[in-house]
Amino acid sequence: MFTGTPAQLRRLETQAAEYAGQIAALLARIESLGLSEVITHVNGRITGPGFEIRRMQDRWTVRT
Image (cartoon, rainbow, N blue to C red; front, side, top):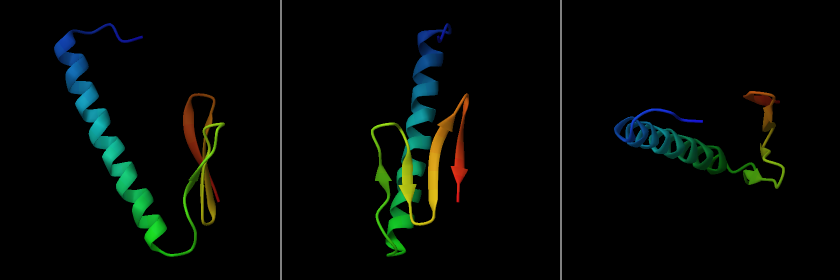
């Protein structure tokens, strides 16, 4: 759980939103290849043409 100041929280949330924007742009670029859609699943997996992203313990992994 976050225990910093409100200013630190706002800064980190801004940074997280910027990273999320970068991820969304990359997913759009993958879809623009025209191979297939990128799909999110209810269990938190993200699959696309030739890959699967999923949470394994404490980090994200990619399986090709």
